[in-house]
Image (cartoon, rainbow, N blue to C red; front, side, top):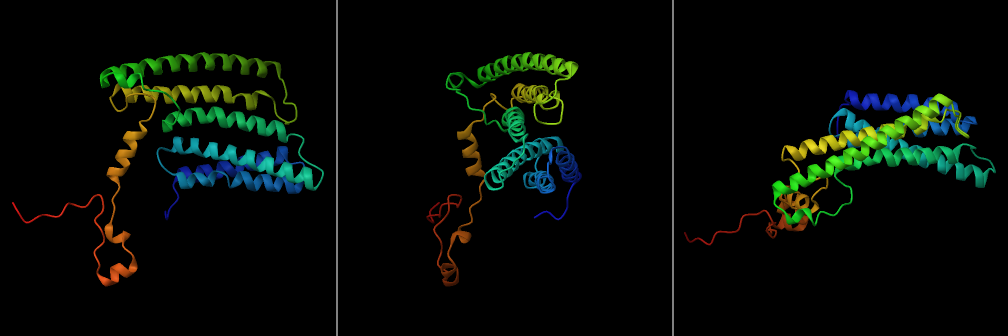
Amino acid sequence: MRRYVDAGVLIQLVAGVLIGAVLAFLLGKSLIGGLLMFLGFAVALPVVYLLDRGPLWQRIEEGVLTFIFAAMTLVTFLQVILRYVFNSGFVWALEFTTYCFAWLVLFGVSYVFKRQAHIGVDAFAKLFRMPVQRVLGLVVVAFCLLYAGIMLYGSWDYVYKIWRIGIPSEDLPIPQWVPVSILIVGMALLAVRLLEAGHAIARGEALSLLGDEAREAIQDFAAAEVDPDAMATPEETRAGIPHPPGPHDAPPRSGRI
C-alpha cells in the first residue's frame, strides 16, 4: 500500500470535489438530493488512485471515465428511489444520464485504443511477414485518422452553430453546447491515440492497432514467478515434505555428465 499521495491524485481529488459541488448546486432540487450528488461526485475520482499507473494525463483519463460512470449510476439509482418510494424525482435525470452515456462512449473510444482492446480481425494481416504487417498497420492508422479528422471537423462545426444560436438544454440548466462538446473532445483524443499507435508501429514496437492476446498471455506466463514453497500447505511445510516442482523450476540432474 502506498504511503504517499502524488500531485496527480491530489489534483483529481480536488477536481472531483469542486465539480461535485458545482453540479450539486446547479442540479440539486433538494437538500438531500444535492448532498448525495455532491458525495457521489466527490468520491468518484479517488477510485483512480487504485489505477495509478502511467503519466498524469493518462490517469486523469481513467479518472474521468470513472467519474462519469459513477455519476450516471448514482443519478439513476436516486431517480428510481425517489420515483417509486417518495413519488418524486429529478426532472433532468433522463437527459443527464443520456449525456453521461454519450460522454462515456466517446471518451472510452480513445481509452480502449490505449489499452489495445478494440475488437478486430487480423487473420488477413497475419498471412504476411512482420514488415508487411507494419505497413498494413500504418495504412489502417491513416484511414482511422482520416475518419477522426472528418468527425472532428463536423463536430466543431456542429458545436459552433449550437453555441452561436444559444440553444439551451431541455431540462438541464446549461446551454446545449456544453454536453455536446464531447464530440470534439472525443474525436481529438481519438486522433491523439491513433498518432501514438502509428508512432509505435513505425518504431517497430507494435504491428497493428490490435493487441496480440496470445502473445501477451505467453509473456505474462513467462514473467510470472511461481514459488513452490508458497504453494505447499502448512502441514507439508512443518513436516518438511517437498512440494512438487513448479513450471519454472529447473529439472533435476541425473548425476551423469
